[in-house]
Image 1 (cartoon, rainbow, N blue to C red):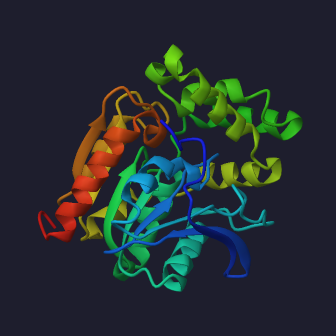
Image 2: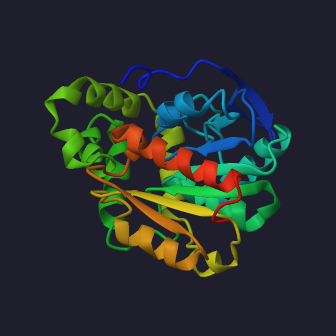
Length: 283
């Protein structure tokens, strides 16, 4: 699809957020703000198809987490609570309260923590390809090995191992989407090595929040790719079971990066959910 490889035109600049220079994009529009928190290895472009579809009708706010994209590589602050505090500051600075908060993978870890710590800032939650638990012990040896190799030699030797974690077999095997795969591989290789390794450490060391989710009282949509191996559908079902009134949508054929793999399906699910919330239906 056109525009998937580029940033959506709009107002973007580095802003001082809690003493750190973070890249923030603010796309003007009416109605409640939709705020986008991206996943590990990515930046605001992870949501380019959704922002392109929603902007104008809605204000869309997105930012690059510290150490990723165009944001500053800091020495510390990559734990999920610090990233959540960054998100809170961005929402407050933007006057975006309450906002519909959308988070994918690591961005979902952040979004859940924002909703738990500052429910006044959150109108609804959209949690995509994510988990409320600590990293599964069975994943840690493989992920730590990949992290060590990347630390020694850079991302190029491990990108081939990352692609099947981040994308499903339908996308990886589709000849018509070769150019997209090449673009996303380039994006992965474009990460700052120091920043991304610190971000990886923050993700792998995170605590779970599953035991706290029953306290949430915001309308919640959980999306998961049918073939997500990083945070499988069982993780999504656990979130839905924990949050009162949450609903689940499985995205057919998608893996862990469903916003890019199946942008039309993800966008439609988000748009329909936001419209329902704003009409006061189901939440």
